[in-house]
Image (tube, rainbow, N blue to C red; front, side):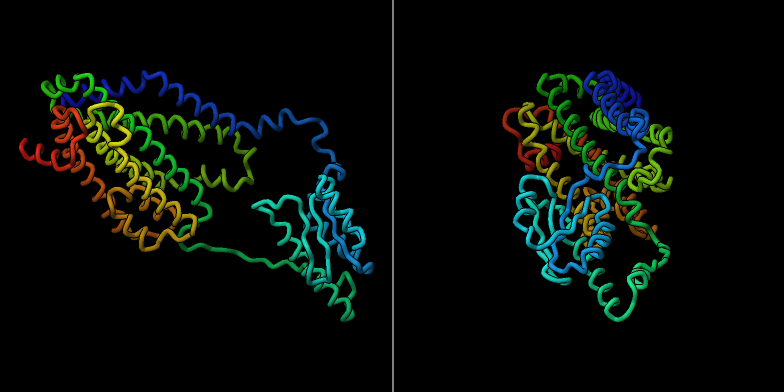
Length: 416
């Protein structure tokens, strides 16, 4: 235990005194501060004319072309209501060529040439991947068609508008988890775990390989227990990663509460910082356990590398394994089905459960016994992988030259 505490303090001190580590932490906190204070700063530096009515001449122009003069007023009102941030102008069909030229030279954003109230052609210069104008116009034209039909049946324009604009009130009560609210901070946690494991896992492997290449490891293993060395190195990297995450997310939480009034109404930001405390505890638990498993693997692999140049190649299988788990979770979240069979299996597999089980806990209802089983498997895996990594670490000291094969490592461990 005494050896372990000395190694832990030494390794942790190296992390906290590392200029790159401190610099990255300070940079991330500064970026978070700028983002969180942006609405306040934007309001402070806003001009005195901020409250003035927007100039319609600065709005993008949309043209609606029709051959039915009687429908011009109705088209103008309807399209202006759905394209409220645009200037809508209703023109005759004969001006189509002129409108096309204006669209191409940037004077107009787009145009809708109506053949009748049920069909039209949408003209735009460069069609964006996220262009939804055509769908919005289709709904607007459908409203115009219905209103025109009601008017032809004897209703006045006001009566037709009243029928079509009658509001429908509804309430939604979720008996389980609200995936919309939980999506954003779940994704952030998964992405943070992804970045930290890849970054610090690589650092653990690199540090071990550096010690080996400098022959320092040979001296260390003769005076210290390899289990103490491996656990000290890995846990120190875990504490350093937690310190960095606490600094970044803690400052984000502080800056959010300082500027909470400026972020009111922003569903994404508010949902991120309103994480339930029990979910936060699960997040820390799965984060730490998942990090330890992968850090031990990276450390063991680093001890088998003879040169620093071999690290990237050696850790590739572990990295690919982790990336596969990451994409399984992300694709399931994107599809909105985090309770599919693949995710349930991944929730009990050591290398994917930190992300998969946490995602299920955050976005759906998971039985308590499943959560406990997943946690127990992870805890057992941490100790199992940790002690196995320590054995590989001790054997790896004497393995130089070409990177050893798995069979050679297993044979050497058995001899020990």
